[in-house]
Length: 306
Image (cartoon, rainbow, N blue to C red; front, side, top):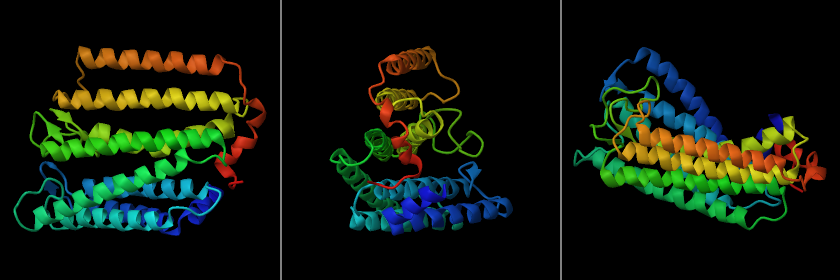
């Protein structure tokens, strides 16, 4: 863990310290939520800034670590713009919570509308610069190919998850079939009475962390899985992950709560699970062309770029 953090700090100091700062903010918000029990649209007031602080903690540290895996410093200016946009986004969300006001989809015609417009601009900036980092990794040839594959796929899926956010802006809400707010799942607040596009948005965003972590875990704990096998597994999991985002988005757009799927959603999930399982079986049974590099690629977890 210490080496991973060192790699993140070397990759981009601003993104690294933003991640650390967001983590500290999450702890502070959690403490505030214990004593400030106000609600907004039927949900605890501080849950939204808490979720965003946690999310940006993972986002900042993951991007910094990925940049640290490159053989030379890259995208430093882009990283600082990401830091600025992220801080603005979370500052608005937290500030509006403190005021007891909506941050998202606030159309009061005054300050709330202005702040929501600013947040919309920051999301566009984050989307474009995350895409720029994805393009940079598409060109990379000097680091472990399994890590590069995981980062490429993870960033691509994150862009898909971000795109779901634009759907929410387009329809003017995150809920479908019911007003925003109302009954929701504990802590996360996802609607239990209608569709909720935040689910697919959340799942997509965090592919950026999960896919590289999959490769790191395989290299660290299952070194017998060869390099070529890991790369095939990343592709299969990536396709399954994309399918999950699509299914969750379709479920939400049909005004269907996450925990009460209909036959269509259940059938789609079953096909997706079966296809992913068969794909992983095929990937692990294929001749391991990269087995000699298995221990070498454990540098994904601890090593430095070559």
